[in-house]
Structures are given as C-alpha cells and as structure tokens.
Image (tube, rainbow, N blue to C red; front, side, top):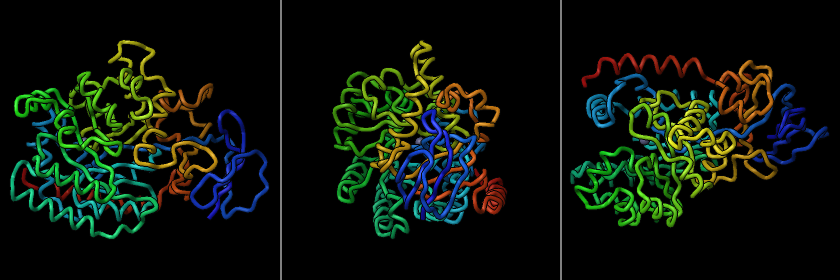
Length: 420
Ligand SMILES: [Zn+2]
C-alpha cells in the first residue's frame, strides 16, 4: 500500500509526501511516483497526529455519569458500582465509541488502563489505530481478588494479539491506595518477564500522598521505587503532587510522566508543575486525556490547550506551556514513551499524521499553524487521519461510525437501569 499526498503544506512549504507501507518514504516537491492512492493536499497542512498516553477508553460510555464530585466520592458512588456490572460485550461497544472519538479528533495512539483488555485490543485492531493496552491490576488489599488478578493476567498473556504491528500489550497498576505489595511485586515481575511497558496512577491528589505517608511513611513515588517499579518503561499518570525528592527519583529512573490537565482540573486534584518538570525532563513529559468520565472527552486538541493554559496559571507566567513545547509533548514525546519511532513528519518515521483544512475558520489566518492548533483549532479542522500508512479517516468520515454510535446509545439505556 502506498499513498502520495500532493501539494500539502509542511513546515511552511508546499511539498509532496510519499508513504510506502507504514513509513514516510520521501518528502519532496513535485514527486513523480506511482502510488495506490493519491490525496490532494492543496489548502491542507500535514501535521503529526496525537499520542494519548493515559486513558481508560471504555469509560467513554460513562461520560456525564456522575459529575462534579471529588475523586474518591465519584469513584465509590458512581463509577465502581457500575463498572462491576459491565460485561465483555459492553466493553467492546464502549471501546469502539472511544476509538471513534479519538480518530475524529486526530489521535492515532492511546495507552489504556482498564479491564477486559482483550475486547479493546480487538476494537483497536479493527479500527486501525495504535494502542498499548493493559488490564488494570487492583486488588483493594483483598487476598481473593489478588488470586483472581493473577488468573486474569495469565489469561491476558495467553491472549493472542491480532495485530502486533500496531498494538502492544502492557501492564498497569491502579495506584498505591488500591494495590497490595504482593500484587505490585507480581506486576513488576510479569512486566519484566514479558518486556512490557507499565502504567501507574501516582500522586494524583494530596489525599493520596498524605494517606501514603500515614500508612507507609513515604510518598507514593518513593513507595513505588522501593518496590522496583520505576524504570524507563514506566509511565506515571498525573504526578501532580511531587516533592523535590520525588522528582529526583523519577528523573534518575528515567520514567515518563503523563500529565492529564483536564481531568486534574475537573476533579480539582491540583495542577501539574508543567514548566518546572519540562525544564528538568523535556523528553519525558507526555500528555493524556484520562477517561472520558473525568474529562469528559478524549479530544487531544482540548487537552493541548488546557495543558498550556494550566501551565501558565501554575507557573504564574504567560511564558509557561509554550505552544511548540505542548505540541511536542502531545506527539513525539508520547510516541517515544511507548518506544515508537513516530510523532514527526520525517522520512523513515512511522506514517502517522493529520491533514488539516486551511480553509477552516479556526485556522484562518494561518501565521503559525502550531499556535493555531494549540490555541484555536477544534476537531472540525481535521479532515484526514493516517495511521501506520493507512487512511483511517477520510474527509471527516470513519468507517462504521453510525453503527458504533447506535450501539453505544443502546448500551447507555442499559446502564441507566443498573443499580448503583
Ligand atoms: Zn486514570
């Protein structure tokens, strides 16, 4: 499969982009090559697509289900009682809804932490994007649940990945307040043995940090480090409440951080120290949406804007969260965190990209396309999305959209009648 994009704006110049198999093969003006598909790029710009490094995709089906509450209250009263009743089939429907939303807003990769990961993997395989999918490890310090998690994880290891080129299985631990030391150790050994990436929620709220000190006499970061869980293959979600000692540990271990500004603002968890952390580890800060029930969407365009604005507010400076830095965090850094040679429009890189409409009102005038994308654009600006050398959205349309929406609506009716 090959695609030739003709006369597209790239780095302020009009050029052609030739994609062969799943890579950018050549970028040059007026190319004369044979291609399976020609895309007219005139009045469009080509840009890196987004890599969402923290998500609970299937939670999209709980969008708007219990809002305006603090984290622990919201989890205990609204989310966990319903999640206990969701079936594998429900997760399949919900995952497709989430992936549709992600594609329509320019995302080509997401890191997922949820349950029934096998269903999410199948949805990713069918819909053409990339993902790192995990089944969440969480036992609430209950021995029976710990034993069940070991069985679930063994089954997940056995599950045959239908598309290893785009999908990698990984492991996630929920948080220090929901995972026993035994389960953390089991997760660490499993991730090492399988060579998997690991995602963990850490220091999301001040309460989490205070409780961890009260119970274990150390911060959540120090606790995870004491268990050997912090490595260059660990992605720490949130990391809002960090001490200087925590930052030192994270830097030394080479972990990545996924900041989730919208979720943190909505749950009033605090603000990530973007400017400070970006100066310390400019390659290791990445961006995520978190699940759609605490965001309430999976639109990285919203998240890049909030990331920048939150960085300005938190650092008390209009120089905080510069557009170029934020776009890099949402693209190259996110890809790198999961070992992908992607996130740039560059020969040899994986062919993931967006084509945006330069006639769209939100991109007019176009003095600076990255500034427009971070501060002005909405998803109506995105016309085409290419992932792994395949057009997964063409002229704003994704295959099977209608059926995905109808199935999600039916499932929402069922959820409305579930007991909380
Ligand atoms: Zn999360």
